[in-house]
Length: 116
Image 1 (tube, rainbow, N blue to C red):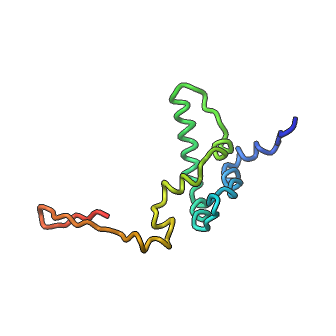
Image 2 (tube, helix red, strand yellow; image 1 turned 135 degrees about the vertical axis):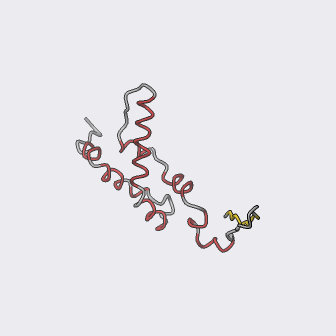
């Protein structure tokens, strides 16, 4: 049987091995070191998202299916990073051009409320 890999079951019994086996995809096409370091700390959040998908299948009345390795195969690491990390942290060389703005609004009792 061509394409059969008897060791894929190992990736299901060791989810961390499955996650880090996709390490060549961390950081997208530019392979940013900042992005790579970020992903190395995201196993729990991404694994929880996978478990949530299985839970949604069960709540929908279907038998939960799909391996974590398959989930990772279709996972868009680049989009995840873009949605999770603010622009200034993703691109520190441009953060000088996008200064932090803090709005101070007066309050009724003499305290100020700040929004960033």
